Image (tube, rainbow, N blue to C red; front, side, top):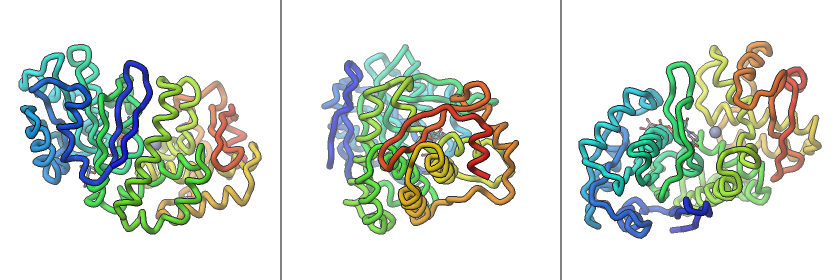
Length: 358
Ligand SMILES: NC(=O)c1ccc[n+]([C@@H]2O[C@H](COP(=O)([O-])OP(=O)(O)OC[C@H]3O[C@@H](n4cnc5c(N)ncnc54)[C@H](O)[C@@H]3O)[C@@H](O)[C@H]2O)c1
Ligand SMILES: [Zn+2]
């Protein structure tokens, strides 16, 4: 198991990554200073079936009395209605301010339970136990929590740091292939924006990762979370450096938002967005053609899409980009690479973006 600290002052916390870490969650929570008896596990019904019992046993083994709330799997559960169910379960479990919420599942459960933990009694301890690739390499760390408004995703949220993150890479074995590969987009992103040697290691080690070799997974998840921790520690509220984590996301979000292109998973849209950003980086920031091609090849080998969908239309794309949170007037703050492993942000006009994508 690999362990490191996220240095966030009074919000500093530990991250543990390894096969079998789930069974140690109780002891790790005690070590992290969670003293209460009454705690709530929030999970979805898929994850409950696979890992619910083990999580409960791990907590009971050190004297916690956990209750469990199961929500329906999927994005629909990041809703006001489900949030209310989480509060109800917290009250029914008699959680007081010394209580804790354990988010066992993917990004949906993490964001939902995280927001509930941030707001219940103005904040109770939160433990993230991510079980998807997306959650293990991205959403479990960083403190972004949210539910969706019927009109906009993640509109209602809070920055709220977990007290502990426990990523058991063995849980990735049960993920469907498409969801597994989706998460690799964010892994490749860390290499692209801040760690060129990681790109090289992914090039060599990709087959072991795709076989879900436990050692390869542990190394990859730990390195990804460590990179995210470094960036988050320097910029907890996304005013500066943290923006580079959006590499591939401006075009990716536009693809996700402009309907009619088929249903991309987030990571798949980001994969296409990273290839598009690579082209822009070549044209506008000095990224070499060879490095842009290496990234594109790696993304393709990970089984992710690289090309804009057939029949995509520029004006629809711009309409979607206008809704981007990073929009500034007639353009958007875009993340580019000047070389492999190094990112910068630059304001690009929509016209400029389209000119290089078409
Ligand atoms: N807070 C952040 O910083 C951040 C970052 C990225 C994404 N997100 C959010 O995360 C959400 C997406 O997360 P996700 O991709 O993990 O989706 P998810 O939580 O919906 O999980 C995907 C599916 O996998 C199932 N599942 C979970 N773990 C499993 C396992 N080990 N084996 C088999 N099946 C399993 C779930 O039941 C679900 O059906 C989005 O709502 C997104 O907004 C948040
Ligand atoms: Zn993302």
